[in-house]
Length: 118
Image 1 (cartoon, rainbow, N blue to C red):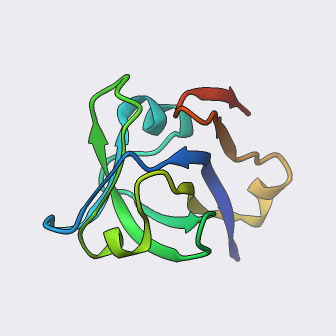
Image 2: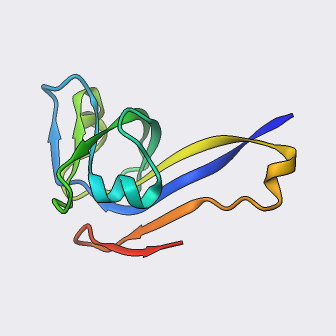
């Protein structure tokens, strides 16, 4: 049997741009994706700490070092510039993988700098 576990978490991102006139996705600094072990077009769940809103989307890559966090398309109704976000992805694990498994947690400082990777 497989079970669903947290794979990656980016905690404390600050939204730097929103654009309704886009097909839709979450655009993040490439360094954030790398630190969390995430890939462009991977499905993620986004939790808006500021408002309590939640939505699912996919990732696209922004320029490395830009500290960019852009919310596009319909999801732009769920976040505004300055809002704090948590972005998570999940994975399926077989029961024999669970005991030694650990997710990748990336803590982000207020100015969208990586503070810690666990």
